[in-house]
Image 1 (cartoon, rainbow, N blue to C red):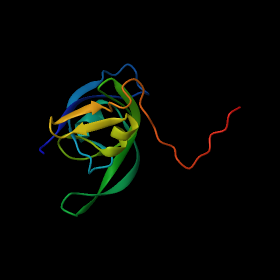
Image 2: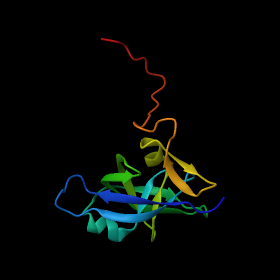
Image 3: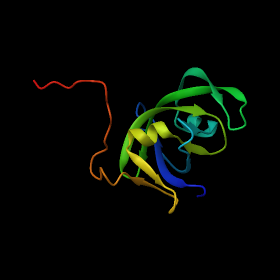
Length: 133
């Protein structure tokens, strides 16, 4: 396999006068959340909502800031998420990738739109009966 990266755009949807940040991110299906370095949270003037405990790859735990909202764009898809603030690079985890219906193509080391849903992201909401009005 190998390391997969992708291009992201990060914005603060509550402060439209701020310029967005265009950045490279590590796409990690083993991680859950969007993680951003502190300098990006400062640049986007993101508000700390709470502290969260995260487990790092070595098994250690750390208390970090959870900020948001963040408007995240990737491959012409968009979602709104919170972000953990730590590290030196942007990490794109499974929750925002699922929200935008993106897949990681390991052979090509690319993040792509799910080919089964090329025009509109698909979301799964099982367990809820939808009734017609």
